[in-house]
Length: 391
Image (cartoon, rainbow, N blue to C red):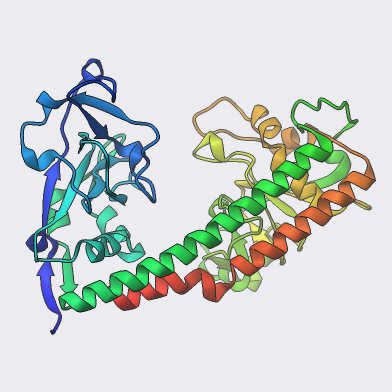
């Protein structure tokens, strides 16, 4: 069967969640209670470990009860979370949706429900859905008419089932890789705390050294934006979004500097640790990533280059797990900041050389595993499949 061009509203029903007050909440085990899903329940899989409930009398229409295969969508949240979706699995209790989320339900026979979920959760369509949000002072609200007006190309039913099945298997592989990476990072943290203890409270009484004693701190800068010739592809120009990621290494910068722009830029070589020291969110202060190449970087970042005789990898691991000490030195503002002078004065635990070497060995093992899991072809396989099968 040939593909058909449709509007999303042709194949789904959009059902707004219920509204209630905090005092209306009842225990989930109470008779006639109905579990009410909230924005916090919308994760990669529906999160069902933290549930609340409302009396059944709040559910005034039968369609508000969740059905297996329904898709919950965040309809009022911060901009980057509007449109986030989760499938409703088989539930052993009655449930509904709260006021800041909605139910997207496939119209019978119009679209295969699993295909609908894969379409809505794909990277490209998540971007399109977020663009349907209307920004207010604090939150973004999903424009339902714009959402339902999104174009969708539907293949025949059998092809929908086939695409959903392939993407489901690929997604399972992707999640297994993600779990392997998470466990590797947990292993690194566990080994660090087992070998040297908490780097913030220092319960083992290790000597402490200021960052200026163990490395050189450099603050990045921005070449003159009015001179277009300062920007090009001679060197990457790192920003905080290349640091504030789950990776231990800097991600690839989207913007670069020209040979002219390099002349006045602050640069570091492979092995330096780059740290977010000015951020819109205080929680990002102290985030770190290692450079595996020579890079330039902007003024929101301080780089720490290990001193003579100090392994750069150990310094990175130490800074990674000393984030709370760094954040404690941040200015008390909505954005937060740790200046070069302040960073240089922060003191870190300094365990014996033997333990430092052991931690470098553990880090190398974790980095090797991560490298295998994050192989470029594997990393982009799922996104490529989405683009091919959902086009």
